[in-house]
Length: 134
Image 1 (tube, rainbow, N blue to C red):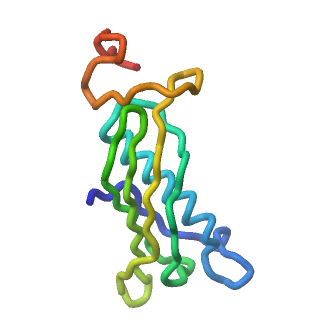
Image 2 (tube, rainbow, N blue to C red):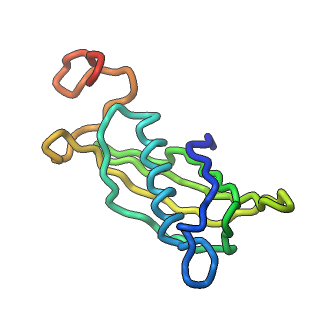
């Protein structure tokens, strides 16, 4: 799996229990998954499904989170990405799994309608070559 995002979490990210709010981690997980999809395809993507997520350990301020991912399935207009999130404790350097999930993204055009996946470096669906800035 390739690392797509690494972040240290801040006090603003905590919940009332003093641990990192799960929604913050979910947001970064979704971002890492979208980056992974864009690493393989020249499309815009929207998230349509996040499969089961379970938080295995609490995360604290200063922990360093690593988000690694890989494409595990693709259809005509959708791609499924597996993301694993590990934390490294700031004080002990212990590394452990925080969560993982499979996320399904759908490729969309500029009007946000479904569109076929375009492998990186390949032509557009209408046969026109990719131009810089597209």
